[in-house]
Image (cartoon, rainbow, N blue to C red; front, side, top):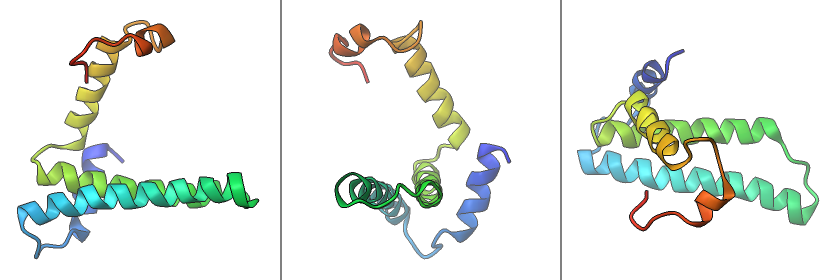
Length: 111
């Protein structure tokens, strides 16, 4: 499956009654909520003796993907464009790959 195809298929289940702002808010809050669920799985593993359930994490990552698609659609972007922008930013920030020195000494205004 291609990423923009995923976005189109995922948006079939988006709430059509929401306003454009509602879609944006739903997406952003959903990303935060699902990210919190992943963090909770790791917390339970680290501090409460639970096994780290990769399949559960993968399902939560799928939910995050859905909310990213919702947010992207709400702001008028397709996921491929967003991913390309991110890769371009990372190439500019780390032209030779990740370097601790470049990370520690980023210029003000770098995103």
